[in-house]
Image (cartoon, rainbow, N blue to C red; front, side, top):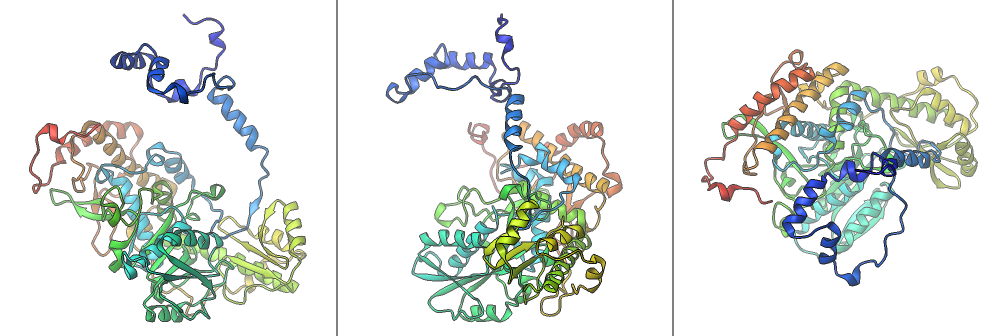
Length: 581
């Protein structure tokens, strides 16, 4: 029986709540291996000459509640500033229905690599939506299911170009990177280029002469200063020099700007962070990579495709497995860690929730506020970008130190460039009052914001204006209220729950089964649309929790009855089909 002193110990210790090994289980395992205690097992397993001769000098373990309180006290020392730094990181408004039902839902946030991925039809549909979002906005034919972030996606794009143009050779070669790319992207590309024997040359794309053996070029659109350039002529020169063209771009800007695939881009990369994913102190965020269909076998990461199950019914599956855990390492195009499943799902659901018109409205509003800010600064005599802009301004001809001091006093972070130049970037959460505050930092008296709005010209002219449609599939045009979105997510939840139960009870199912469709199934849309939609109309998708639980058991039984080994594989003895421990 525990002593009274033992009762003073915390009740919510990490060991008790999170290790998951009951005392009886530990005792049974010790009996099996022939030891009386954990200490005796450690004495036998760990050589004495590498063990510490004394107990660790640590305080008593804190309970989970006490530890969280201590962490909150440390976090409270932070000073919370509003960020207008930009450089690929933007504040955004995460819809509550996505935050509660995906970001804070362990059924979604624990997703990494489903080992029987084809059973996870709901998860695969969300990733297919992400791929469709990327291909539509970039104007390219194929996209993967996410990358780690924008910088590593750019490095992967360089490696893709290297494989396409040089194969396995590591001859001295050149990869050109515009000096107007984000600085962190340039640094990552340089680091990844070293083992490939690639020289990374940076400079102005308008004056570059393609000297040396150039196999690829990388530009930023819009660039890190905010300016928008027409790269069509530069890409034509690059293709004439037998180089692939890579564009690092902004998804929200592409709601208004011409798609990279329309002016000659071979690969487009970037970050989906501003599509509903909080900045999170710099990460993590879902990157993306899209390319032409002819380069699909050189594309890194995972790819979700529409296939058929063994009964001929449409279903989703992972296709073109090119990671090193799937194929020979020397043939792999990426390593094991090349995706951000949860954050890609959030970005895809953000696009589903807002739809094409909602995204366009957010982009137009951001563009308007940026132009209002630019016009107000020009009235002060400051210089801003001569080229068209979307959400970022580079302001010169000012006392930068004075501006940063005023910003710090107002708890605002601006981008540091040099003594006479400041950068700032607006986003979805910026308001007209914020524009007034920013103008005040530069010494502009209160202005008539309505007058600024009325006079601002936010229409892009050719060749920058977007004329092609995007997000035309029905899934992006149906669920624009919270209750509709909740129903859509919950049907994906049903597919995920069926997957979890199937994994628990069908351990002997071979891993190479093609896409299998759960009872609350998803059927493929027409091939020209490339998405899946729910079989039931939206009005029939509202399932209460108790109805969901009641329907799960028969759905699971029907799913188990549909799982079959493809006929081309002979049925093996049961012992041979058993999974390794």
